Structures are given as C-alpha cells and as structure tokens.
Image (cartoon, each protein chain N blue to C red):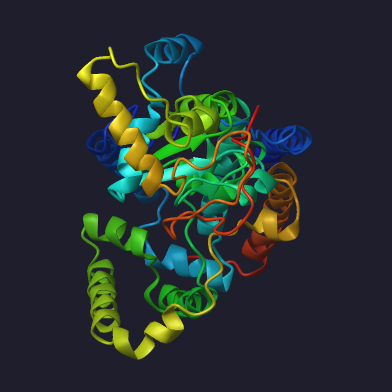
Length: 207
Length: 196
C-alpha cells in the first residue's frame, strides 16, 4: 500500500471523529472537592467588615471590591470603588482578567454572604487566587457602620475601640449614622467616593 | 492537566529542558529526511521533490489532531495554549520575504541549522544572511515599525473567523492536505529530475 493511502486511511477517520464530537469547553477544576472542603472549613476567605472598611478609608490600592449582585442593585447602592460583576456573568470572558490575577485583593460582596461565597467557591475551584468574601455582606455592613450599637457600659475596652472605629468609619463612609434600615433617607454623602450621590438609598439590602 | 508548565506541574526550567530534547529530536528527523539539502527544499517550488511540503503538513495535521483529541479527553486546556498574535500586514510582507529567501537560499531557518550541523557551507552562508536580516530589521526598526504593527487582529483562529468548530475545520484541513499531497506527487512525476 502506498504511504499516502495508509496515511489517508488513518487520518480521515480521526478527522471524522473529531469533527463529529462536540468541542470540549469545560473549564477544568483545579481543586478537588476535598481540597475545597478543607479551604471552606478554615473560613480564611472571609474578611470582616472592619478590615474592609479600614482598607477603604486608607485608600489601599490593592483592594478591589466586587459587587456580585445584579446591575440594578449595584446602581442603587454600592460600596466605594466597587465594580459590578453579577454572579450570573461570573464566568464571562471579559471578567477573567479581573478575577484571575496575582496583584489585587478581590473582595466579593452581596446582600448576605451567600452569593458572594458562591462566587468565591467557583473562582477558587478554577484555581484563582486572591479572591475573598465580605463577611456578612451588605446587611451586616450596614448594621456595623450605619446603625452602630453602643456597647453596654460593662463591655471591654476592645468593644469600645471597635465601636469608636465603626462610628467614625460610618461617618467617613457617608452614612453618618442617619441612615437606618427603616428610615429610607437620602444619603448625606460626606465623601464623593460614595457612588450613588444624591440617590435614594434603599434599606440595607435584604436577602 | 496540560499545558504542563502553565499549570505548574513541571517547572519553567524543566519545560525548557524538554524543549531542548524535543528540539534535538526534531533536528535529527529533519536531517534524516534529507532536509539538510537545499536542493530538496527548493524542489518544492520547482515541483521535482515535494517531500518538505508533505512532511510539514503531516506534522501539522498530527499535532492538530493530537491537540484536539487531548482537549477532548481533558488532558490539555486549549484556552491556555499560546496562539501567535496576527499582524496582518507584516505577516504578508514577511511571508513574501521569507518565501523569496526560501527559494533563493534553499533553506528555511530550521533546516539551515540542520544543514550547518553536518557542515554544509551553503547552510552556513544562509545563517549568515539570516543574522544580517535580523540586524537590518533591528537597526531600521523606526523605519518600519508602523508597517510592522499594522492591522493587528489579536490571536484569531481560522476556524473562529470561518464560524466553524475546531473539529470540522480540522477535518476540512485533512481533506485539503490529502488533496495537496496528491497534487504534489503528480507534480513529482510531471517535473522529474534525475540527479539533485
């Protein structure tokens, strides 16, 4: 048999097979279920609101807040400097450079922790680093900074220090303690960095 | 799983070492197939010897099928495989210059080193010319950087621009290649040469 015929007999069926099968578009998971479970159990992906507020106030350039709620919700209210990547578009090509990088510290947040945590799990399983979750989400954020509760007079100094920080952070972040979950007031934006300046602020999220 | 170096299964240095081993194998096969003869390479353009065309096309098809099957089995993530970016103008101009050099010199850059390794004088002269070309390009970069960087298209795949899946395009390419081999062998009979 001629070499060309032999070659044709081999590569034509191979070509037919590869033309007939669907393209493999699955993104391979880099972490096994065991590894991911171990990471979830350490809870190291969570950042406390105080740590995040501190970074915002210090204008830490490595911080990148990512709002994983819908665009609608993002436009109504977002944290200073946040960008919007709706959880439904998480795997879209245009965001892969933001999510898969080694420079910035991405902090996902949603109303509670649930959706942000889902986003973290998906990106972590794809092997991305430097993604974190805002603990408690916006609900807890508002509780902590906009509706700060004075600790009981018997509390430790630590509690008072935390209270003082949250009170002043709340002021600096534009809440000023005037916005509570029930009042639905126009935000008295102290800082221009707060995005929806002058817009009506919805009550603190809600799952 | 793959690409091995990008997924940090092997280190960057191991990757270079493997490339070195594969490179030696590639050079050895080129030499054994007679690619160190400039007459054999120039033969493609005159039609009397088309082994170069057949070998390189077979190699391309083998690699293409291999990558597609590896991707199908989940052994390699094709999104992580580097695709050369396309600068259309410089690709066309460069292709013409290289093609002309190919016919005149009887070598392509890879085979010229193959020829030099077994001591062919014409291959050594060809490599000299190669370096002169690199030097002229570097010195005169300001003159042609506009053309060099014109018509940047990103890193498109032919299958994407035709709107076909990779698999169907691969099959078409196999058919085209086999047709080309047939034409090439017909040309060898049509324009035979006794000694070269």
